[in-house]
Length: 125
Image (tube, rainbow, N blue to C red; front, side, top):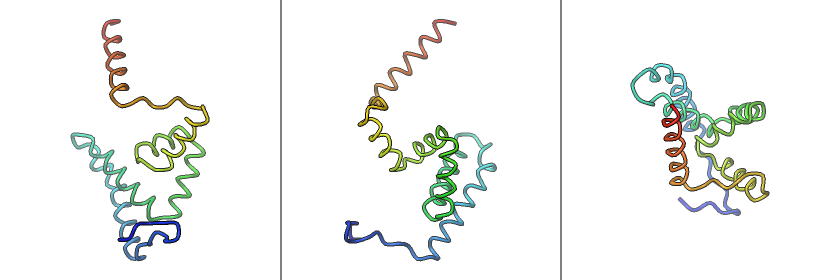
């Protein structure tokens, strides 16, 4: 497939494919309570995969998701972050550029801080 450029818009899938993906995403979301009690974090990944498929293939769902994010911004930010959405990365970079937020330290530094905090809690017990 040719690369997407400003003069060449992104090709849309055939409507039947989009509907099929929407149905699969909905089924994944609905199966989350069944998969959730199984050992491991499977339910989280099943829900995230279903939500991703639904948001990519339904304009109604995207609008609804945007409305929910405006109502509960913290939850919306967590959802965008966990779904690895480009809009989240773009907003985060803009906030850092404007000085509204500190840049996120590298993963190694975050893990080091987390381990240090856990050790501090264990010592205080």
